[in-house]
Image: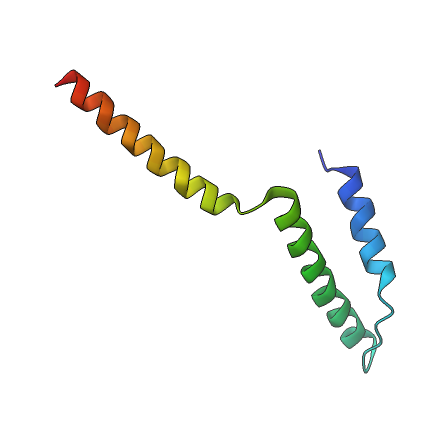
Length: 73
């Protein structure tokens, strides 16, 4: 299920910018580029650097597995 607050935020970002391009398609493209930037910032603030965290946790798991193997041996 989609987060309704996120959808409301996307609508707000979309309406906020009064971007005018050379034509309707260009304006649409510019608005999409701006929306992408807003979503990237939101994502980083909301979730942080999840891939870095995943990498750290995988390293910890490997250390635990090595420890378990050493105990068994």
